Image (cartoon, rainbow, N blue to C red; front, top):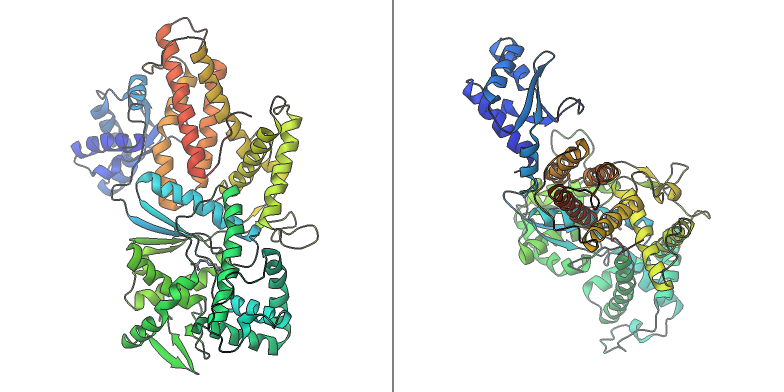
Length: 581
Ligand code: ARG
């Protein structure tokens, strides 16, 4: 149970003894932390309902609680607030349980947080989904859910047809294009990743400008989806090449997927689903296409129908998402699916969620689109390179690593490091700066990319947090090397110790809130506050040269706990801490 839950239960019992509802006992962190640690406003609500004087009720609750060992002081303030000061012994003893929170009924969850299209290098647009999704995955897992992270590659649909027809124009002599050829084909078509990356923008521009090219692309897409062997072999090559490059980028970002499936994996289900949907009366024909109407009478905005199969019989992004839900249901039987995809796709997911609910495949309320805002440049528009292009993720990682290297050498951290360690630390610090900056804003807000600010060693930044965690660990190592004794039971002697203990105990509440709201920034705030509480504690309280062995042992325990907690927080946020920096 979290500290807040324990206290709410206790105060709730006092309300029940007064013949009032237990829920009135809910406590929250005090508005005036200088006066008390927690407060309960239940007397005001109770008074309204019972038409009584709130101060009287508050006094009665105070009297009921006066013998409880958990409180050192209970004060009735203002119109009837109950301010609660906790007893040091109770605080210290509560640390045994650590104030953790685990989810009462864990679920089986799939998180879909990649969504990158193959054949295009990853770019900054893919950054937020990866960073937020990775953290949410870790948070869900930590509270007890059984979580599968799926990259859900964009490997199907029109862009594949665009690429195939582009290649056919450039290299028509390749065996893959022979009409009716059934293979076998040379296993690796002579295309490199560089070729692909070059072809992609050319192909999509050509299709935009030239209707004839767009038509070719559509036909190629249809033939690919119908299983034409030469096209399939090319497609396989495109996917393999991109996946290899993506894995490296995601790896450097500290992002790991359990599943590397894609839209194409759902394709075999389409014929069966088309039939089933029409049997269920969910799908209908309109101008040669198969559509699903998802609008409802009470819709306040426009809700266009889904095109499940276009008039050429090819599937798009809606159909593959629907089929993927069915595929996941069969393969993994999840209770819930989370989609970490940007805000522009809100309509898309609303349509898809409604459609699968209509069909009885998956309940709408168990599908969540956890959309996020945009990372903007200083001009307030989506972040671009100086030349106005999109920045590749690889170049982005190099850029933050370089900046970290600069910072680290200014600060003189890197002096006795060899080159390998220096680079490794710089990458970790750079990536942590970026990830923390991204996560520390509420998921749904836009934010401005400002590398200098992200990279600062002071303030609420990734580098500060990494530094704090490295420092705590080195303090613990120093104490242990000085033979200053073993860690022992925690006792509170100084206000800074009290604040630190309270901060450690607040973890469960922060975790629960971050989990329930799907908002990692709550853990960023908590981590920053904990690091600050530790630094105040360490400035005020001696450890090695504290004469009292019991106090020394208590302080060592606190430092160890903070070290472990910061380590856990970094892990939940997906940040990698170097050994030293
Ligand atoms: N590939 C899509 C795009 O480029 C994003 C996919 C997100 N995930 C999903 N299940 N639809 O826009």
